[in-house]
Length: 385
Ligand code: PLP
Image (cartoon, rainbow, N blue to C red; front, side, top):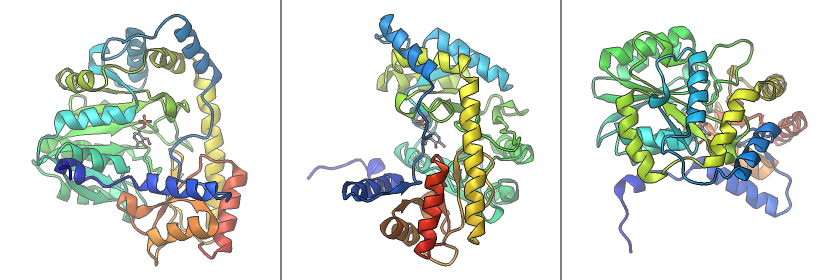
């Protein structure tokens, strides 16, 4: 038998993938599955972005690009970052990647040495843990569930968890899987700890454009003391419904970008040429489409919260992204609950345990109102709510 690297063997297979597989299996049997387990918008990519990609293909933009990205896209990204108050970043502070996930992978590979500690706020997106392990790091985790996924109440626990041994902290607001948007006060609390212990912080802002009720998604890199210790990460998948295009980026201090550029150029070379051109169009001409999608998510969010609350389920209110984590299994095993939900009601959700938060399940509302209602009706019919 082959011998495998321990850093790979330490990683768990994706829990979300296991659920998608189960849903696909049932669908192959002819069952009608309501899939609330997906992490992508149910909208098609806006037409003008597709047209820009076609035009770029026709113009022959099919070769390698400069490794860190085409100048037009970097310039458009610098403008966007400046609009968000992140004025410390210029074109040399950026790497354009095939998806935000690759950006994260490169950051972890660049910063984490064997046994360096990575701090996560639970419930945390599953890939952070995997990437920390692949880089050889160890984990320390802070649970925000007791505070309805808000960070302010968990700052004391975070202060306990981090130390001078903590190399990296990941902050994701608006967050997957919880949908919480962390307050400015909470972000300032993070800042104080990062400065005290000299911690680099990844600010994963991939859901930044998707917020509700006027919630403000604070970019950590705008806070005093954070401009040189924040790596700001974003991508096109969620805001522009471009998951399959694979386009993302990160911005950070020049020395980090120069080191990470080695991981980038020796692994992917560059992001896809004509996709980068489409990215310029997305950034400069797509405000209306983004707002339309945001409004659709906003309506569905209220609709689903109401349906669940009518059934007596507690729902910590999400202010962003397109997920919520109702407390569906306060007294039973949430993995069993999700197994029953898919087997008995044909409703796919992700158990909170997959994100470090048992008792809850992640519901994605990137789905029509009809299907959301169908899901809740079926779960109720099986006594799961
Ligand atoms: N960060 C978070 C919190 C996510 O949920 C995702 C996608 O699910 C990503 C990053 C990466 O997305 P992509 O690689 O499609 O840009």
